[in-house]
Image (cartoon, rainbow, N blue to C red):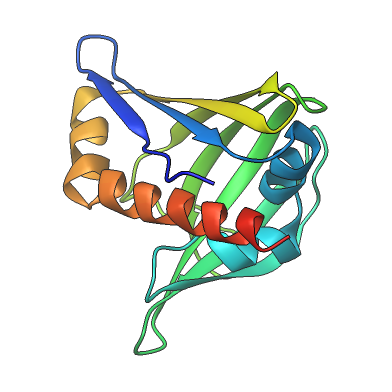
Length: 165
């Protein structure tokens, strides 16, 4: 397996961040890793953080409530509201920062995610992520919080997970 790099592009005018990433694994394995709480908990957070799922209901209208747990035990909660799911093709959702019960924290922006999955060959899957914001300042805030580095680290964790299957 070769190390893959995430390709980030930022479109300030359209308030959008795009990320393209290839994984050396079949589509079914990559899809399962993005849609199963027990697997997401193994790769989603950038080390030394870890992800912990509060609950997950992966269906249209369902939610994933999870937290990022820091090395000192501090927790940052997020809620993913699933809008559309086209199995092994795409997922659209809205993500908000929240408390442990899933109540939205209005101090942080709502972020819309679109993830598209495509099989490139028998063992290569591409994931295209498009993240859109209501305001440019919201996009700038997320980037300032270290999103690019953190998301890249998480995607690298996913590589490690897939290599060990």
